[in-house]
Amino acid sequence: DQQVKQNSPSLSVQEGRISILNCDYTNSMFDYFLWYKKYPAEGPTFLISISSIKDKNEDGRFTVFLNKSAKHLSLHIVPSQPGDSAVYFCAALGETSYDKVIFGPGTSLSVIP
Amino acid sequence: DAGVIQSPRHEVTEMGQEVTLRCKPISGHNSLFWYRQTMMRGLELLIYFNNNVPIDDSGMPEDRFSAKMPNASFSTLKIQPSEPRDSAVYFCASSRTGEQLFGYTFGSGTRLTVV
Image (cartoon, rainbow over all chains, first blue to last red; front, top):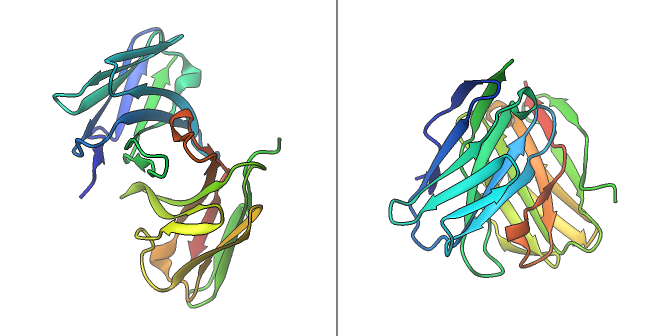
């Protein structure tokens, strides 16, 4: 059973508009959450993270929101640019140094010029 | 830093053959991870090493898969015998222990096709 879920396999957004990518998790022991971005023929690259003690973290055009009671997080991209077209993976891990990162299945974002 | 280096980039092999994938982590990183990406399951963790010691291999699909890390700068993932359902992109990633929150560094992956 998947502990990290991304129920939308794909998303299309017009350039300049907001992109919202959603993620749900089942394990209440997760303490940290991350988003990775992946272009074709490349490995995933780290984008932004958030600790469970926060409900929002912002880095430029990217903001991650966490609703711990709902076990839900989202990544907002504003404004969306064609270069943002990629697969976005939501990921989670626990609090110990040896915890492994568990990834969701990914959402493919297409930003239309 | 050259990043995490994986070889080969592409591998096409016949069913039943042995396949060996290679990974060189970033110097100074003491945690190494092998992931497999498929359309159905996304990125799934196969095995995780810390200081060259396997910590968690619960994701290894079956005995046909094995992984080694003989030293801090090299790891292999071997499939013997290979099957068509093993076709996927295999990623290696590394990090320093405790720095997972800052993100793993992934290699570019090996695209394996078993025919």
